[in-house]
Image (cartoon, rainbow, N blue to C red; front, side):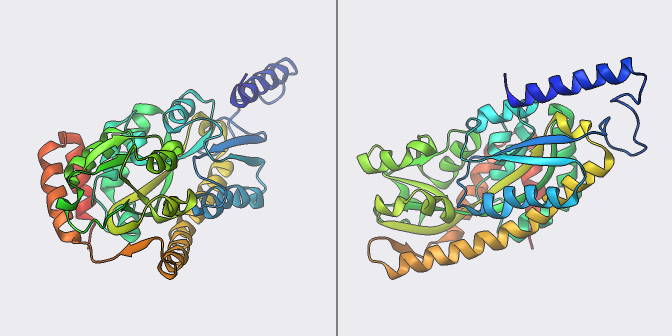
Length: 341
């Protein structure tokens, strides 16, 4: 029996006892705009990152700590490093209610609501500030509302966990340099579309198997944010990192059925905690990136390639995406680009 199911059973028993004793029902109105709630709530928060990465340190842990400080009867238990399953499995668990909260990439969420996947389009966002501006826009509000209506899952916030970069055993300065390389991309429709948009030949390999695949030559290169590349020591099996900055690595903080089981006060505390994390993660990521790049530049085994023709990649990607997006995805993409400065 899952933790989430056990929590549900406890609440059902509590409701039954309260009804028999003719006390305030567990579904009683607390006078706010929140859900039924009123008692203590234990939230499971899952993600796929290690505890050393900023997505955990400055994201998930900040959320848990800030909720605890609020002292509103809510506790957050974090399950990092895909302990509760891979991205696709966790999304299904959030929808079903077996996991309460999750930190997910937009392309993964596209499996249950396709338009949101366009947030992970190549060169959709220029940087983390651009992502922040978009999520403050009416276009983002409409997307989030559509996602909630379709799935029953709320989006409490979003941040960029850094721009994705290429690594390989040769420099990648222009689209033509990807020719002949077997480049690993995540197994999602948006990432595979990005590969074609950028001029790459994608090979699908699980993130957990990526180091070995590069070491054994199953693939020639890959793309990931700097913090992810450093986390699994890809500098040990690759010679070059080329700073293409071709995609903002989005993280959306989502919450399922437990949201409607909390009081308005509890919801506000959780939302405020997420807002705090959203404000801290980008700077945390930037600091980690600067430290990691400095270490690589000081060494001799991993060369940092900075003279990448980003304009050439961007132009190619934009034309491909506009020609191949479905209307709903194109609308999201254009909303993102409209938020650029």
